[in-house]
Image 1 (cartoon, rainbow, N blue to C red):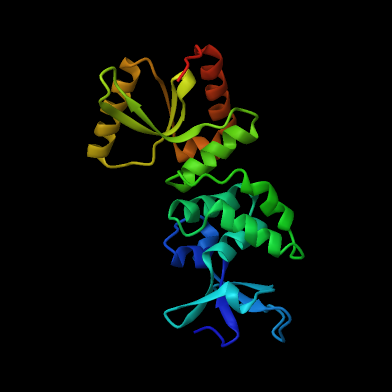
Image 2 (image 1 turned 180 degrees about the horizontal axis):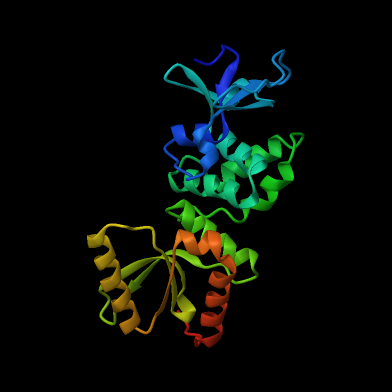
Length: 238
């Protein structure tokens, strides 16, 4: 049980809102205490404790436990986590319509005295509500931070007669370049993905498949493959 003056924040608050960011730090319970407090943010086993400034409006009750609101959760995660991991949380909350870019921007304006607020300023233009998974956010940001154009998420491809073919994780439609994150281990899903990607290639699309291993172990190879594919492709007006 949490102390009366404690509340859930950060990655644990995001998890309570249904956001699985697939971050190992989410295994800890993120606990906040209001600033100032007499406990001085003392760490506890299994907990990650923060001493932060919150108002009553920053908290909601969740099963009898105080939790930071979705907008405050996004605001804090962007401030506390790396630029990429903070956007993973913000993208997911925005996708589930718990936060909008506008609401987060307004909150940021109202809370400028807090630490690291400039990180939120920089993140606002990078939030993508259409993103459907943490790895899609990570791959998109990997490419953008390498200086490549920002790919479009969840792009729908139709065939020559207007029939649905695929909805792509990330795409450069004007180059007919698709980037798919492959996190599936189920054989039936893998076969469906193979058929869908073959249909895309028949329509002239280049399909690059990125796995978690590619992202974490050889990100420079992912960047090089995308850059090479973009340089080889022909621009098509869409």
